[in-house]
Image (cartoon, rainbow, N blue to C red):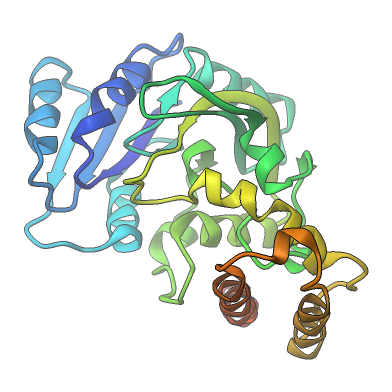
Length: 296
C-alpha cells in the first residue's frame, strides 16, 4: 500500500521546516510527499527545493500563476499516486505516529474511506494554547459522520489538516464546485459522508498552529470568542432544513442582544458572518444533491 501526502504552500516559510521535519520523521514513512506551491516569494520555494534535494520522495510543483487554495489542492490531490492520501497544511506539526495510527484506524474500521483526527492547538512558537483541543473549539462529536452532521451546522465539520482518504477516482476526477466559503476539506467531507464512509478519529494526532497569517483554516482565538455566540444562535432552534428555518434562527439571535457577550462593537459583523454562512450552507446542500445525483 502506497501512502501519499498532499500539501499546498503559499508564503509559508516561517513554519514550513517544522512541518516538513514532522512528516519526514513519521514512525511509518510515506512513499511520496507532493507539494504544490502557489507563487510564494518569501523563501518557501527555496526551502522546499533544499528538502527535495535530500529526500527523493518529495515531488514539487511550482505554479507559474496563483491558482488559489481550492484549485491548488485539487491539483495536488490529482498529482498524488498513493492508495491513501494524507492532506497537510504548511504550518502545522504532525505527531510522530500520525500516519501509523491513522492506518490502524482504517484497519479497525474497514468501511471508512476517509478519516480526520483531532489536534492540539499551538501558537507561533509551538506552545500549547487555550487548554482545548481543536474539536473542543469547533464543537465536533466523535465517531461516524453522517450528512446530518453537516445539515445541523452551517460551517464545515472536517478539518483538512487532519484528513486522510482512500483513493477515490470519482472524487479526484470531479472539479470542486466554486462556492463562497467552500474549501476542499468541506467538499471532501460532504462527498464521503454522502457515501456513508466518513469517520472521525478522536485521537490527537497533530498540532494545529494558530497564527495571524494563516492561509487556510479558522482563526482559533476568534472561534473561541464566538462559542457563546454559537450557543445563542442554536439554543432551541430546530434542525435547519430550509432557509425559512435559518431566518427564524437569525431572528432569535437578534432577540438575544441583551446577553453580555453580545455587547461588543463587532456584534453586527458576527451576525453578518453567520448570515453569509447560512447562504453558503444551503448552496452546499444543493450542490451536493446535484453531484450525488449525477454520479449515481
